[in-house]
Image 1 (spheres, rainbow, N blue to C red):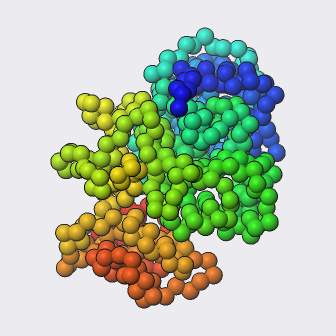
Image 2: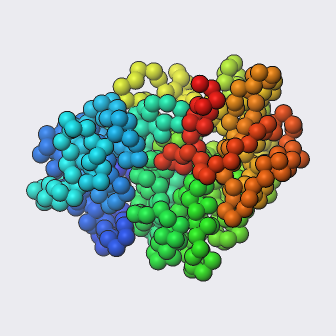
Image 3: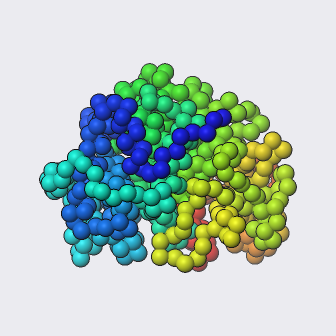
Length: 497
């Protein structure tokens, strides 16, 4: 594989792809399409406006918006002005938004009218629907004279908060420069790609993944509605070739009544990640959608994907794998206590050493990497003899029952093989006898009646007895964050108070 051209900054990326054709479609939301020429001009105007507002290189601009073309032009405009875009999660409660704003200390807040209720009273935001266009019109379609450096921070994303208070991971131009390379070399993207981005742009699976196709001069499709029928309709209408989806989105597409009659023949590849994909769901998705599926693993702190498995590698015996490390980085699996490397088949914490790694968290002195540049991910995995990684769980989600280690993902996969199980999460709960015992929280499959005793009997034919749930709770839905990850902290809380 040849070494790909690496743009030094996001501004360089936008200038390069605009040169491919100013009238090429860049971003579409519903009936509105922004060409690359328009995106380039509007990004210059954003940069001009930020300078007029008094923002200087290194200052922060917070963005509290739903997905839309403005989000992308704000990112590129901030990059050209040396300003850091702080992406805020509009699904949070007002106190949570205030806590992040207090931490980020933005000099400017841009929000939508629908998000005004989340904004503290002492903040005076620039409201998108009220003043944004006139704000841009005061500027010019020309550079502001700032020369960004590759190591300058350009984006600040807050962790999804599955385990506690979110932290602001800072990402540089150099970190994000790897995303277009991923698009070329691993996602199979080019200038003719039509890429669906259903994830929120305040998440690395949205804004980071979006740069994969945009960095080729491809067409990026955003969504205003995540209902199953709308997803399918957008894929058919725009002849979508690529998409990234968390398993919940894949399941939603398969559940859409329209999927059986939709023409999705343009689909080439769907990348999946962000949460475990069960074998049962993956097999069904491959059969129904008929395109290649690509497993990816990464995190905010690594600016996205660090491990991937191509469609042709999806052989039966490794459907639970997330793949092998990308060639420009290093991966280790270590014992979380001793720090020693584990061998083939041994479960250890994933460590990453890469040019993608964040330089650190905002307002935190604790280093994100050790002296040798290794980032601890907090995720547990094992490696087979061919070098493929298999995720188990977050290290902190490990269940120790009677001295035996139980990895929830293994149990979840076994439970999901039962056709009566639509969604499932496994947690550890207190046990007087074993210290912890295994509990499953299950959402029945659509149109089925779940018999708890039958599910327990079935899973005992698949797993060692100590790994099997001792109880099952049946619920209507699992709590998830914006990235689609199950909030196991919320599921555990009632039992451990």
